[in-house]
Image (cartoon, rainbow, N blue to C red):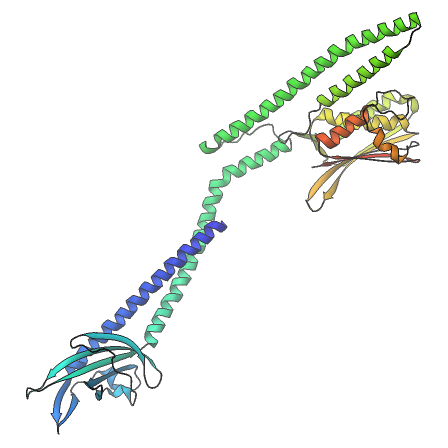
Amino acid sequence: MVAAGVVLAVFLSAAGFALDQAFRDTALTSVEERLTGRIYRVLGNLDFADLNGQRSAVESSPDLLLATPESGYYAQVLDESNDRVWNSRSMLGLTFEGPSERAIGDFFFSKTASSAGEALFVLSYTVLWEGPDAGSAVYTVQVAENERGFTKLVSRFRKSLWLGFVGIGVVLLLVQTVILRWGLKPLRDVAIEVNRIERGEQSELTGSYPLELNALTENLNALIRTNESSVKRYRNALGDLAHSLKTPLAVLRNNVEQLTIATDSDNSLVGSLDQLDSTINYQLQRAAVAGRSVLGGSFEIAPVVEQIANSLRKVHAEWRLQITTTVEQGAKFQGDRGDMMEIVGNIADNACKWARSSVSINVYLDGGDRKRSIQQLIIEVRDDGHGMPQEDVASAMLRGSRLDQSTAGHGIGLAVVKELVEDVYNGKLIINSSPCGTVAQMRFDK
């Protein structure tokens, strides 16, 4: 719109200057033609005679404008020496210069100023006068007109012209705005549908679009379907792989443990199998991550958090922990439901293992980065356990790291959570621990 406005302004300005110049030239030509007619009337109304040996002009039928003092219309006759031999009554003591050029039978148009400083248009016409005594003399007839009428006429035209052009420009911009909005409406509709897909409100573009956008919408839908199908096939394949590896590994572990007991030999093989099992678990969980998809859906977090809390209440029922959940209304997560269960489940399960009596899971929205105007989703898990030294927090998030060997596990839960939160979803995992308990906070940009 800015570019269109600039082009329109330049075009109308150029057209305005051209029309202004054309009108000015036409008005000036009109002045010249009017002065030409007045010269002919002056010539028709004057008679030159030789009185007492002096050349003089006798006015026989004066022009009314030329006979009215200060009318702004003047006439005079100059001899070949540029001495005035006659002037109209309207001049009333005024004078103005004679022509700078003289050629018998030619008109000479010019601008000058009177002795009173009045701006004048002057037309001069030089004639060869032949008297009755066969004598001849050269005379120059000059008629003048004040510029005030011409200036007012041009000024009125300019005012009307530019007011008209401004009105035309405004109307054209409004029409152009309507046309652009109408022409770009399909693109806005596509953008709205893509936003709905990002929010998980629909799974593909369903609108009816013009021919120019068909290729775009069809390719976007194909991309979404291909992405969903690929993720589904990939995760199914990983599930099959996990099943095929876990069963023979469990059989192998059982056989090795029996062999170790029977022979009372070193159990280093069992440790190697444990390490292999840990590595397989970590790599499978890592590879199975669906991650954030720009065109993926979002889902309500509340049901997922409540499902995890119910599971933990059953798993840790013997400890009689008080597990509470608080989820802000409308809180949604854009990504995979399994990833969310992996993140919250691992953190909450760790909290239950170390809590004394209570664990809370809180989900809320925060203003986030004000400079970027991005809202953040915050998931916070608190426990009232003994905590751990703050300097050990970084070590606890390393793969295979277990600060307390007395609890069950492979030492990969926090490592998986950290990778999911920070590497896959570009979020931030913050763990603060003290003797009063531990707070794990996960931040995600919405």
